[in-house]
Image (cartoon, rainbow, N blue to C red; front, side):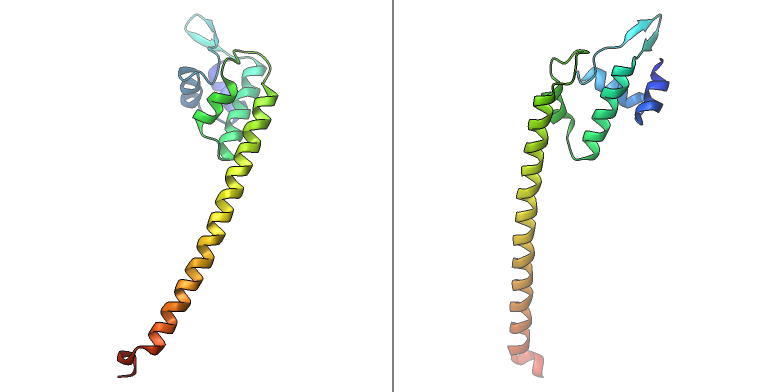
Length: 123
């Protein structure tokens, strides 16, 4: 199939597909004259990339997972490790945000206390 059809089926854009090829995320497509031809495996890989991006993966992270893939099966062990790493990263961020929320609440309470004790407020 041509690049437009691959983009449509994978939910991405022609520009993105070309970019993924340029940075090595997607193996170079076969050519028919000046046209690029994609197979179902390419569409599945494009769908994987799009889904992973929507879940917060950066292209550099995906490059580490897909390095040397070149049209072979997805390296599942690397994908599972990347998912585990991303989940840990999110858990760490959630913990940090919860801590920040508590600190903001405490800061707000201390400001309210200071405001109520300020003699200038009573004038």
